[in-house]
Amino acid sequence: MRKYKMLLAGEPVDAASGETFESFNPYTGRPWALIPRAAAEDVDRAVAAARHAFRSPEWRGLTPTARGKLLSRLADVIAARADELAEYETRDNGKLILEMRAQLRYLPEWFRYFAGLADKLEGRVIPIDRPGIFNYTLEEPLGVVAAIVPWNSPLMLAAWKMAPALAAGNTFVWKPSEHSSVSALEMAPLFAEAGLPPGVVNIVTGFGTEIGDALVAHPDVAKVAFTGGDATGAQVYQTAARNIKPVVMELGGKSANIVFADADLDNAVKGVVSGIFAATGQTCVAGSRALVHRSIHDEFVERFLALARTARMGDPLEESTQVGPITTRPQYDKVLGYIDIAKSEGARCALGGGPAARPECGDGWFVEPTVFTDVGPSMRIAQEEVFGPVLAVIPFDTDDEAVEIANGTQYGLAAGVWTSDVARCLTMAQRLEAGTVWINTYRVSSPLSPFGGYKRSGFGRESGLLAIREFVQEKSVLIETSGAKVPNPFIVR
Ligand code: NAD
Image (tube, rainbow, N blue to C red):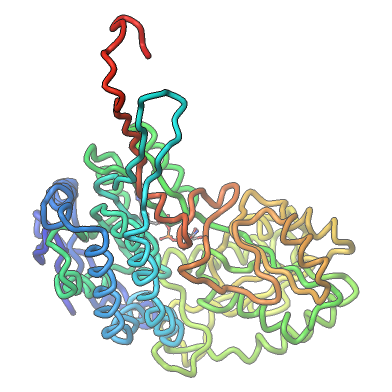
């Protein structure tokens, strides 16, 4: 069993209590790593280290250009270790090695993009309407940013927060998920290797229910960047509100992949398969509802099932595997629970519908790729996030009906549209209530492109030009330049 340490003030440390917990390999269902089990006092240590680093001349004294260079160096250091980090992620969260490798090889681009923005926070000169006053603004960092991330893409979701937060001059306390802390702790030495001063990035590991509140409520945490489920998000938001603290919320989804009659059906079938079965459906943008025009419904379903049946399940470290295990035992139970709910609601199970009892799945937490047809838009399977390989197929007759069904959930993270009609592309992009709309493609992301939710899927944006603005505050400076005497001091100017 590998035993890990947290990262506080640049040092590898145990939890103050010395306690640890086990991290499981979802493919074997067995523990493989020991992770420090932090408590509130460890959170205090982490935030104090980040606060100290924020005020230190080694960090605050850097020019924004020099800060950007450090982030570029961090990108290079990560790039050199990408495949190794990917393997740790696969062992820890069970996602396919091909996917994690692609993700980790691309991850440095987030640091490069925001490195480039570090010295472009320019402030403004305001042509103020008060004679004799010179008014300009400064774009200043907030202080200590706390990042709380889930288990499905541990390093990527952390990087989406860390890169803009550091580029803007903040320091960082990172709490990975208790289900996938290994890659964060493997990454810990890379910050010093890249030349970041100690304490700029700190990693505190443990259970959200034990240290989440302490971190979010900590008076020296200036902002919380949260990715996770909406129920947890609501708790984090409440704690932040009680402490008058801003948050970025990246929450769950129930994304619709809409297939029109004029779509290239081959592409649409592949796109919808990838939308729901890639990452075993454990992605916030999973296209977990397929809305299919009634005129092509049967043909689409037939082709979809034919392709889905070919999915190779098994060891996620094998490059030939296409569907891996569910990351955690509770999530495995939850997915199976939703399959039962769908059956009891009257949806027709056209594929899968239970645990995968295949020899290649060993003792892992595998669920068969599952497809429900005859799904009504108001059924729970069409409304609630499953976060697993379960697709609900819903027929529609008109564009208006497709829009109504697609928008008819409390979520609004992403949507997919499959059509060959340009006018329809444009109108659907406008009418869908989702932070991302993919048209004739699915799951494309980039550091250049804003990402975030509408409605209950959250608020604030990660990636893209404006993401860095989540981590700055604007200060207005007003200077009297005319040399005039201060007028009547009892009247505000
Ligand atoms: P989760 O909400 O259970 O946990 C997320 C994180 O919050 C973990 O680090 C956890 O330890 C922590 N946490 C738990 N309770 C807390 C508390 N009371 N205070 C503070 N932190 C607490 O989510 P999960 O099961 O790890 O991940 C799956 C969810 O994440 C899904 O809903 C998925 O849609 C969502 N997600 C969203 C995005 C996005 O960008 N919108 C991306 C990936 C995943």
